[in-house]
Image 1 (cartoon, rainbow, N blue to C red):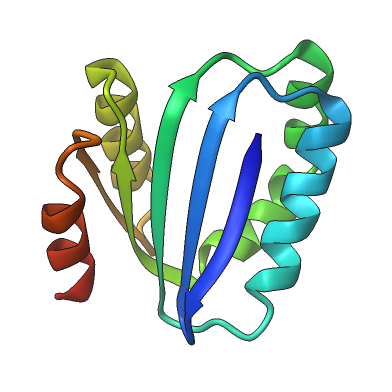
Image 2 (cartoon, rainbow, N blue to C red; image 1 turned 60 degrees about the vertical axis):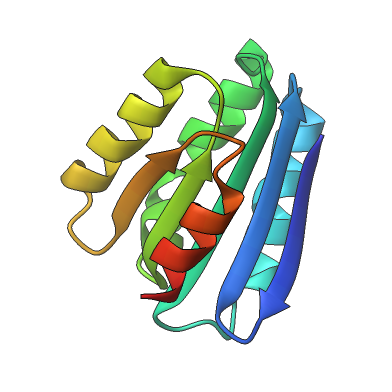
Length: 121
């Protein structure tokens, strides 16, 4: 499951749970682009409930849209990633270091208040 909610003028909340197949990945990326079309200097809150690697087909879809997603990510300045797996938290923060337009910080799933405070800065 991949759910995107616009929770403010410049904010999207994303919930990810389970394994995405190619059709779900396509729909998820379309929804991200659509719901963020008017966002500038935005903020993202990812809640990774139950992470599973996406299917091979989903990875192919994601890579095929990589150039467009680099444009999409520039709409955002901060992303908080709430997850219970430390390795995903660390990878998220490394990704943030590699993309200069966005700051990404990992939080445990029980640290929603801290993630919200950090996003609000």
